[in-house]
Image 1: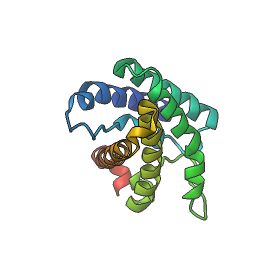
Image 2: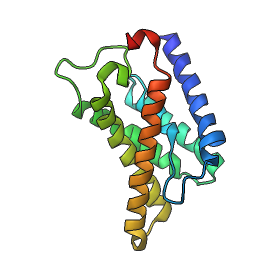
Image 3: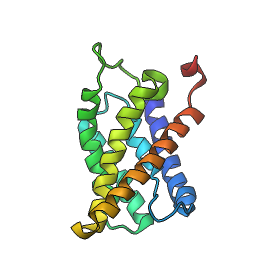
Length: 172
């Protein structure tokens, strides 16, 4: 239990640092803005209480907002993603349910499940984030293209991160 908490705190710090130090400074064009920090909410254990998910989404988002100077946009998108996560997990739940103490990872439930689950959460996060940022219908399709391309690149980064940092015992 304590190791899971410490591991998640470390993941929180590392993902924020990678987002603000590395990814923020990579120029991929004006349509592509990957946000790897969403992996924190995606990878929390299945039994995480909803109140803790929402609080984590807010703290994560507001921390990113402080560095991106976006006045609560990431906090709103993070809270929405955390709020909708239990419903998405229920949608993709296996018949036997999820094993207690596990996390939603590629190693545990496989590539198709993980891409479906995380892809939906990432798209929803990006929809909220980018449409709140623009906040007008005149740029609807431009913003939709931004959501799509940013979601694809974020999902690629998330999957790559899953493979790079998988536990050796989980891979066996």
